[in-house]
Length: 136
Image (cartoon, rainbow, N blue to C red; front, side):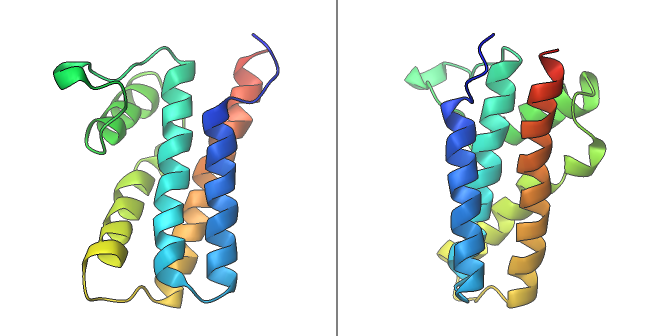
């Protein structure tokens, strides 16, 4: 396997950097949105690395927002134990926060955004670190 970082991890890093920038500038709704997509893309990269592909029903070639967390948690946390159980709630919690930020009349607070950013940073960094360790 080559040492080049997969495109999806590059995108996950970019989303995480965007979330950090949005947080620093007080744009907590945008921070929540970017946190979710950073975690989502990192999870896709992890699933790709372990040979999982999205179900191809209805011509789908990408992961749905429902199937991705179920497969990541079920296969890579619960079954194969590639990732620690502490990551189990990250996708669901960031998805819920993103939905509130994007689709409701509620505003995301600084505290909510800060917690999401911390969880997302841990999620993305763990996937990046495990990728390096798995290749040895």
